[in-house]
Length: 92
Image (cartoon, rainbow, N blue to C red; front, side, top):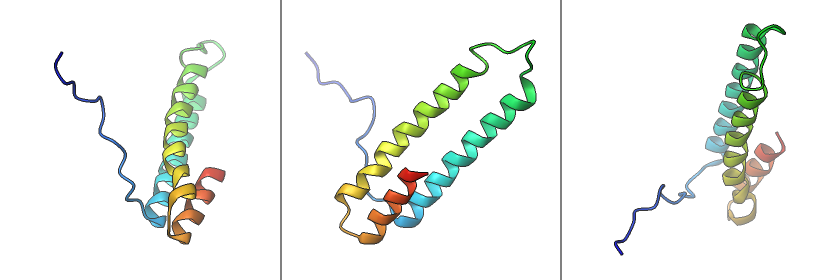
């Protein structure tokens, strides 16, 4: 059996307090853009599970994946500012 390459590289824990806050803002902006797009394009006549709930669920899955990565800094970071930023991000 040959060695297989993992599907993704391991997470590098190199974040800064500023980068955590920037990442959180990007998530908020992306989610808001999705909700705005749904509100602007979906009517009660064309609303389906796929173009509303499924789209929101996919976005929430992305958010939760990032939130877990960011949240770990609250437990492992030596820098108190990084722990504080991580805690703040996971509360939003």
